[in-house]
Image (cartoon, rainbow, N blue to C red; front, top):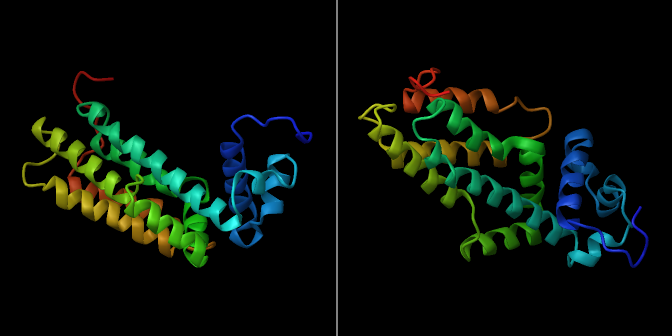
Length: 203
């Protein structure tokens, strides 16, 4: 436990990671400010010291994870010509489903104040699905130029289909529903025509 008056390093990430563990283990219904701080092993009032309330905490958790995935997507273009196209896309698209993503996002959408905060932040330019979509399209364009994606593939339309499907699955999944990752992987392969082979001469 962190004693009163002693700074907790990286407190936001510590609380976010704790919330993800609670959701993964016990489901979204178990997520409360107390369960988060207990899981994080810190003082019970720490969450409210750093967030105006639980709705703000849930919204900021979603926005933080969207931003992380957007950063992974922006790094995709540097992977053009390396690994496999499907594998590279999996890294980004499936990151949205990591660590209880569907349950946390569903929880945010079920809380009007949290949902409003997420929408306002995205409208103001916070990295989200649009940023991920644009980065995926840029990556596919680069791979098409290298001949690793068929010339007939439209990068913008393919990125829209991939990210739009991920968004739909993320917002409609619930505890106990089928794992969406297999469907996403099949969609990636179908849309890109990418074979699971490593680029010649690249390890």
